[in-house]
Each structure stands twice: as structure tokens, then as C-alpha cells.
Amino acid sequence: MLSLKKMKVSILPVTINGSKDALPKHSLNFHGRHPMCIEVLDENPYTEFQQLSIEETAALTRQRIAARVGEHQQDA
Image 1 (cartoon, one colour):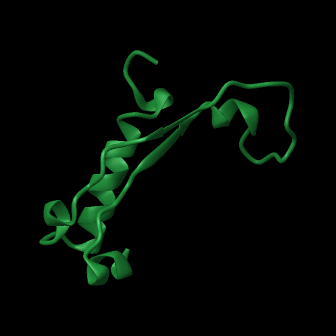
Image 2 (cartoon, one colour; image 1 turned 90 degrees about the vertical axis):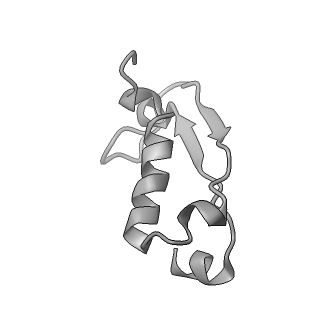
């Protein structure tokens, strides 16, 4: 994250929905077929986080990703 701020580049958040069922926690065993969806979210322009700390920038990005991950949504 530090190099992103030094380079003044945008962040492009990505979500992967469905991977939890395909690869259960603490396991490397794949069982059957599981649909997954990869979504590239709108970029976080550098101007949105240039005044934020690294921790605040990470929290903002994490919040945007979590809002699009199925298991974190209210209706999921």
C-alpha cells in the first residue's frame, strides 16, 4: 500500500464470490463444481485517499469490497 501512495496510482478493488464453497477453510481439497463470480469494482482514484493514512485507505478499500461479497450482504 505504501508504494501505491508514493506512486500516486488508483486502487482497483476485486471481489471473488463463491470461492468459500469451492475451497473450504483450512482445506486444500476441492469437492465438485462450484460457481464463482469475479467482479472488478470501480477504481478508488488516488485523489480519494491521498490525504488518508495507509490504515484508513486499507479500511476504505476493504469496506468497498465487503459490500460486494455475497456472504457480507444482508440478503445473502
